[in-house]
Length: 427
Image: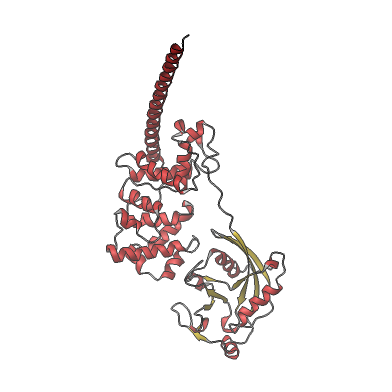
């Protein structure tokens, strides 16, 4: 074979390979479009016949949808339902929420955790009253401008309440898309979320944005679950590339979050005596920061010896905290140990129990020279609350009934409920 014939044969082979590549590309494009159409069609058919009856789905009130989406962040549907019903009963309109005392709002949120969500929700309600006459805005830029509303929540409100073809990409959605389309990009990276947000509008059938986004979330919550996906009953299993490739349990790819920082805490449950009989001493957290404005048992950060049971220096520090507020007490003894994980901190709380000595608090405060003034809060007797005039710090003697009106983080709520229920066994 001559050099020219060799060159012609190579050229013909190259041209054939290029034609084959283009054919595969066209086939791949057609298959991809068919896969997308199949996904949207079968997902909506499944949702139409299988969707759960949830209270916020019974109407398209944008306020109800907004509240439910905020509550559902980091929280399971079954947990949210009773909270949602109580919250809407207490604050039936945006204006009712905007005008309520913040402590009432946080109290209605008590137990759901991530309390900044409740404060942001009320702040956004106040924005809506001021700027939109109490009506949830439907314009994209106005929804995004609301306090505490990010891309997911904005997309959920716009699509579910107003049927706009907007993406609402949360963990459930990213898991479903990663498996169905065999996306091996790290979903913890912002660029992966952005890519999926761009994908969603292509999948939404015209006029079905509300149902489609809810169906996508529902599939992730009920069938395409994190650890044990129920592939055999999945409505879109036939074209799911993750299942076909045997990677459904490996997807999505997600870098592990940093473990919460462990912290040892030492607290005291101080029982009242005399005029404070049947009450315990609590204090209010600062108005900003972790668990802002909520109530808690007095406690301190414990030293390195606390984990090993060496509490000597920490007990002395805790006693000083009480002494500085004009308090006297019987010897402290161990009560219980409780744990709680926040997004970035894990608390191990050792709680001691003691009883207030018989001298009255007013007499002790006068002797110590600590500058306290008696407050007159709406929900408490004057003698039951003290405010440090120098720091503004609030302390209060509370009964079990008072817990119905003031908000506690879950950690302290559980401890106090156990105490008032009479479960006072010692360690």
